[in-house]
Amino acid sequence: MTKFQGIGVSPGIAIGPVYRLPDLHQKIPDHRLPPEEVEAELQRLDRALEETERELEKIRVQAAKNLGSAAAEIFNVHLLLLKDRGLKARLVRQVKEGWNAAYAVTQVLHDYLDSFQRIDNSFLKDRRGDLEDVGKRLVRNLLGLKIQLSDIREKVILVGYNLSPSETASLSKKDVVAFVTEVGGPTSHTAIMARSLEIPAVVGLKGIDQLFRSGAMMIVDGQAGVVILDPDERLVREYTRMRSNLREASQALESLRGKTATTRDGHRVCLGANIEMPTEDVSVLSHGADEIGLFRTEFLYLNRDDLPDEEEQFRAYRRVVEKLRPMSVTIRTLDLGGDKFSSALGMPEEVNPFLGWRAIRFCLARPDIFRVQLRAILRASAHGKVRMMYPLISDLEEVKAARAILEEVKEGLRREGRPFDEKMPVGAMIEVPSAALAAGAIARRVDFFSLGTNDLIQYSLAVDRVNERTAHLYNPFHPSVLMLIDHVVKAARAAGIGVGLCGEMAADPATAFLLIGLGLDHLSMAPLAIPQVKQVIRLTNYREARRFARRILAMESAEQIAGEVRDNHERLLARESKGRPKKKTRSDDQT
Ligand code: PEP
Ligand code: MG
Image (cartoon, rainbow, N blue to C red; front, side, top):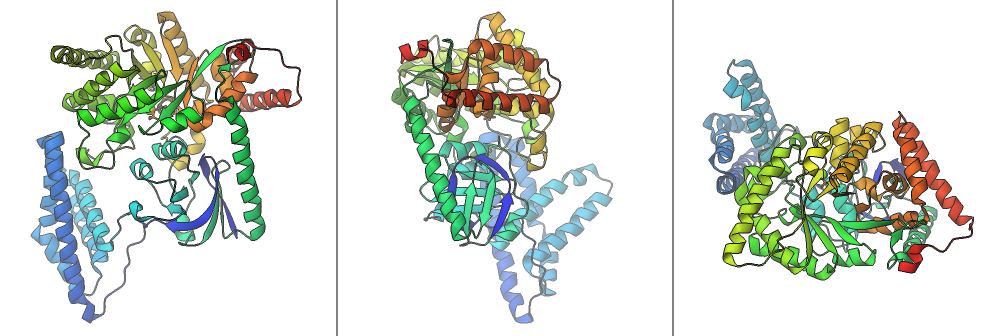
């Protein structure tokens, strides 16, 4: 029995057999072949070269169609490198000398990269990354390393080096009871997907690929970040009991479903749900949300080779809006890039994808794709209460440019006589420090703000949100993060527009007291987090929370703030469990 400590990113307890994902980072075998196997290895090499060429051809065509000739040129270069006769001759020579083909690729590649580096030619130096990409693709095809998540048909715990957000989106709760990976952080989109699917998950477990074999029994505690391999019977019993206690506790909180999130002194907070799939309405309703505070639309674009057209998007948005009517649904326009990539778009690999061609930047550069989504969202607005917001605004000009495209699209719909809500509110996500600091100017051009603290924290602290090595530096309680939130709330107030927060920070019940105190009236989170946050709000006194926030804003250390927030939370719960005589509240009257 072995116990490991990682980062718990999606709560819940799971017990089951391990299913190991193919290891794409494993060491390339360096064994030599007996002479009788050389011919077969040469044929394998040929097949892998052909398969790689087919893949690159397909991506090149898609890139040309969706991104234009400049992007397609990248894959032309890849194809040229792959088809280089000198490269093939060298690979064949290595295999004839008895090296296995995958090892031959790494050796030949190493020599090429070395010579590219030494030649004083900036064009060749720039091609190093392309050559590496081609080599990796070839090795993957030689080793048959393709993840087939759709093949999984039993209740397993997935273990692997990494899962991308799109792979996570394709998991079925029926078959996968938890997952454990080596890389990732709590606000990565992989973790966000796990929470929305309500699948327990632990990330940041160093070296797990070497440690776990398929079929071994495992316990995963997604809250504590604990993973236990080969547990004894006593532990299995203990965790089975904990699992049923957790279920009972969450069922007890379900009694809050029909109640409002209103403080003891009558201040109403609106609790929203963040959703990633149009089919999540059941979980939104069962956990008692007041609205959809964030509908992440990019998942409609992942796990497919083409782009969703206007009709498909319109049906998806209308489905959510109609099912949840009269709730308000805030649809966020496409936020691709960062850690979410669409294979249909063949988006180029970037050195710093979170600082690169992402979200509104991508949409403004591709108005053809953006317009299709805007039309679909506007058309859905005729079927219920829709709000729309732009992600990753970093400059006022982006708001103006997006608005100009929106006006054109509206004009087109009017000409066609298609109905839409002329007054659909349009907001900006504030998740880049430049936008937070310039919030005053932006507030005068939009109808509402939504603070995306997952990104705001990563950009203001310069800490990659998906890197487990820097996860300890990713701190929502850093004074500068709280100062930015405070500044944005004040700017919104001054302009008379609404402001909410939809980052993962909103889902922490201990932080709710502080956020309310900072003046946030709309908090949006994974549906499963809503009952606990609602419970805290119903124990809170708004005036106390305001005073608490002012005290916190004067503090200089994140550690001290985190300590105060936890202590305050414990006091709040203790006060409740001591059974202080409860005053009749306005919230009870309203529910
Ligand atoms: C955020 O950044 O806080 C946010 C809600 O958006 P996402 O997590 O999708 O980047
Ligand atoms: Mg964001």
